[in-house]
Amino acid sequence: MTAASLTIDLDALTANWRALDAASGSGVETAAVIKAGAYGLGAGRVGRALARAGARRFFVAVTEEAAELREALGPGPEINVFSGHMAGDTDRIHDLHLTPMINSIDQMLRHVEALPGHPFGVQLDSGMNRLGMEPAEWAGLRDIALAQNITLLMSHLACADEPDHPMNAAQLASFRAMTDGVDVPRSLAATGGILLGPAYHFDLTRPGIGLYGGAPFAQAQPVAHVSLPVIQTRVVEAGETVGYGNAWTATQPIRLATVAAGYADGIHRALSRGLTLYAGDTPCPVRGRISMDLITVDITGLSETPAALDLLNHVQTVDTLADLAGTIGYEILTSLGRRYQRRYSGA
Image (cartoon, rainbow, N blue to C red; front, side):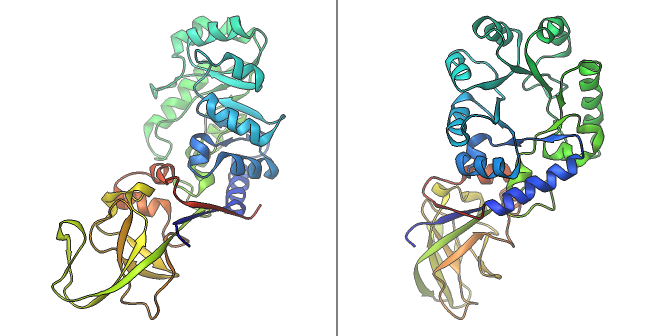
């Protein structure tokens, strides 16, 4: 092995989708969010695996992502675009049979004038103030929109990862006020919303991070596994320092391994304090700073020199790393760089 490897467990991925599908309840369709290249894991392979598992609706961020996914999936599955109908998107939306999630009056006018009769969804702002039509804007456009080929009304929860946060109930009430009595399928819940319970499920759920093994879906199986090859080992004597800035000083003789990965591979420099790599189940602490391409690791406790050490495995998940870095699992996954040898196992 000459480069760090990223193995994506497609069986774990599809098991997570099925579990979230079951949690969504009977009569509710479960879609799949695979924006940002399936959270950095490869939209084509991930999309095909989820389609084989039963997903028929997918969500991406922009039409460029939708084009890649359509090539992988072929005709049939519905591909929805969160950014809506942007200037310059018309041909791609038409030719690839995409469904834009309309976010504004301007987008609505662009869509119905350029592609009359072409299906679309509408994204409503229930309080997050990020994307979607606000209640007054929707009230003025509602009758016009409902006379068109509208497939979905959706909104997005801001605090679903915190079940007791009052914003959840407030957004649910706002979404209901905008959509109750409308004969169009509705969607409010992503992964966190699914876990809030049936009141948030409506007709369609849209799991994202939970598919890939991330919080708040505590029962998720880990999907991403990262292994870093050992380049060199050495003995570091007591009093010697390791890495840039003499950041770590040995207090006793140790055996040190240097592995081929660093912050250019999405292993944030902020992880330098407290990060552990693994040889199987045995933890090996990082010593010194994480640099661009290299990490130094204490392997004194191992009886043999390993060929590689694991960054992500069944013990250390994306959320473990996120907690160490003071961020979220989404950022850890989407930061994994292009230098990894990507491998797929399972379905």
